[in-house]
Structures are given as C-alpha cells and as structure tokens.
Length: 123
Figure 1 (cartoon, helix red, strand yellow):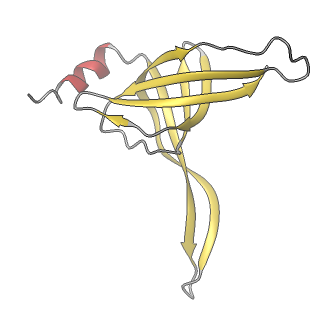
Figure 2 (cartoon, rainbow, N blue to C red; figure 1 turned 45 degrees about the vertical axis):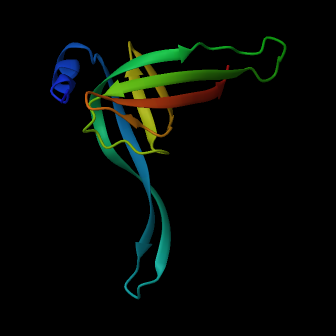
C-alpha cells in the first residue's frame, strides 16, 4: 500500500515546528587540481516544517557543582523529501525554544522521515 500521500497531510496538520539543516563542504579543487580542505558551512534547507518529540527528558547530575551536563534526545518528524543526512547540523525551533545538534542516521518511511538529534550542553 502506497502511503506517500500521507506526508502532505502530516505537513499541513501536524507539523507545527520548523528546522534548518547545515552541512560542511569539506573539499574543493583549485586551478591545478589540488584538493583544498574547506570548512565553510552551507545551508542545505531552511525553515522546513516538522514535529518535535522529546523521547528522553533532561537529566542533569545534581552532584556536580561546576559542570552540570544536559542531555536531550530529540526526535524530529518531517516530510520524507527533505534531504537530511547523518552528521548534518540541525537547528530546530519548537514553541519559542531553539535546539541545536547533529542528526543521527535518518529513518525513512513512506509517510515521513524520523531523525534523532542529541543535544548536549551544560547548565
């Protein structure tokens, strides 16, 4: 059964958040054909509709005074046509909050794309 048409319905009714994806162009060639390592970040897509789900809540260590790590596991659901790749830096806007991290291997389904993003920082 082809469920690809559900992606458009999800985009319209369920995707209330937005996200953007950035990637690094790592190699370029100069006029002589030599490879130049280039770390310029490029926007692959911006402000695409998505749905954000927190599958693991913040669980900081209360015993550490000087450094209190924060770990979020965030799942992003979006249209399967969005070109998300593993390792891509994603910036997600959810209810006025912004989350940033790197995408794990995206899981592609006919109706949607599921991406796990782990945000790490310090409180």
